[in-house]
Image 1 (cartoon, rainbow, N blue to C red):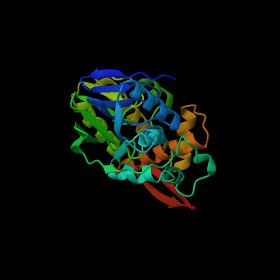
Image 2 (image 1 turned 90 degrees about the vertical axis):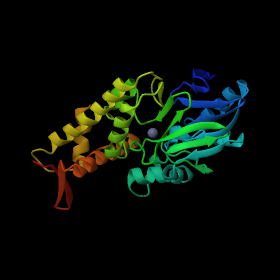
Image 3 (image 1 turned 90 degrees about the horizontal axis):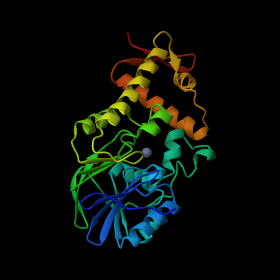
Image 4 (image 1 turned 30 degrees about the vertical axis):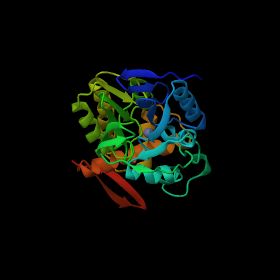
Length: 297
Ligand SMILES: [Zn+2]
């Protein structure tokens, strides 16, 4: 597959695809934002940049999920340093941790798949929220935690905001009802922060680059709210264990799944329960060896 480098504004470009790749240039050098799922995507990105006469100096991984850092190696071999937040650094350097935390212990081997576990890569530079300069390129690093615990976004001097998976485009939203989320409370804060922002372009990793993201972010927030209220409706009249809440949610949405989809949904439902507990909308008790969740009245 041949990739195309498209200009968004000034020195800010992107390579559209299943995972949109950000490219910010300074003369004949550039940095990329995320690298796709695997070695093949990394090689394709490298070829695309080389054809444009660009030397890649840095990779910013918005977060540690395999489809965002799986292509790091070919670009690193070409001389790029890897940058991300402190928390995501721990995960990108130890990618075994992702199937581990999704399963909550040593995972079954089906979870050690390339979709959940990229090859580990060393992170040379930790990026905190705020201004940073990489190879003469000025950037604002945004804290977009929630989808992943230390997710970051990148705002370029041209007013383009690369949002990682802070929100997803309409097609993905319709497919999954509620996107995978590690921390619902912070994800909602991140979405509200993005909704109040006013950048020139918004580029989600999965979806269209748009001038205004107000509508699609509102749809993402609505998806969270629908899921939260659906969970509350399940536990309004009876106390249920987490797995039963998940089973009812999945049945209601007619989902079919494998081990990977199961743990992703289970994590998201767990994050919803944590949020409902934190906001005092739900509580738990123990009975007959089970942890049971119920809605507060
Ligand atoms: Zn992700």
